[in-house]
Image (cartoon, rainbow, N blue to C red):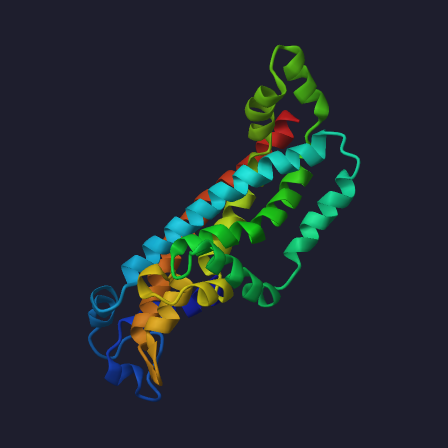
Amino acid sequence: MVFAAAPFEVTIVDALKEDSELYTYGLSPFWFIYQPTFQHVSFLFTDTPFVRFCLNTLLVGLLTVAITLALALPAAYSLARLRLRFGGGLAVAIFLVYLVPPSLLFISMSQVVAFLGLQDTVWSMVVIYPTVTTPVAVWLLLGFFKAIPVDIEEQAMVDGYSRAQAFLRVLLPLAYPGIVAVVIFAFTLAAGDFIYALAFVSASEAKTVSIGVPTELVRGDVFFWQSLLASVVIVALPIAVVFNMFLNRFIAGFTQGSVKG
C-alpha cells in the first residue's frame, strides 16, 4: 500500500513546492526543504478555466451515464429475455463495435458533429460518448440479466405485474451490481477521454479536464508543473472517494445476491 501510494504522495508534495526547490537537482521529492506554498494551486483557479473544466467534465459524465443506461438497459433486456431470431449474433455485433479504435472513428465522428452544428460545445461529447459506452454496457448487462433466473420474473407477472413492472421492480434491483459497473465505466470513459475531446473542442470554455489541463497548462515549452500536479490531486481525490463508495456497494450487491439466491 505504501509503495502504491508513494507516487501520489510525491505529487501532493511537489504541487506545493516553490520553483527554486522543484528545479534544484538532488533535493528529496518526498518532503519539503523550504516552506510549502499554495501559489500554484491559486494560479490554477484564478488564471486558468480549471473550474469550468471540472464542471464540463461532470456534466458530460453524468449525461453520458444517463444516456448509456437509457439505451443499454432495454437493449440488454431484450437480448436476454425476448426470443429474437438473431439475438446472439446481434449481441456479438454490438460488442464488436466497441473494438473499433477511436483513432479510426474521430474523423467521421467530426463530420457528424459538424453536421449537427455542435463544434466547440460540450454537447458534441454528450452525443458521441454514448456510441462508445453503450455497446460495452449492453454486453455487461446482458450477462447479468442472463444470470438472473427467469422464474423470478415470471413469478412476479403471475402475481399481477406487467412485464415492464417486473423489469423495473424485480429485475433491475437484482442487476444492481451490473448497473453500478456500467455507471463507473461510462463516467470514467467520458471523464478520461482525450482523442474525441481534442478533435471536437478547441474553445477553452467547452473543454473537459482531460483536454483542458494539458492544453492550458503547457504553453509552448513552458510547463506549469506544480499547477499540473495540483490539478491531478484535485481531480483524483473526489473521484477516488466516490469510486470507493460505489465499490463497497458493488461488493454488497454481489454478497446480497448470493445470500438471497
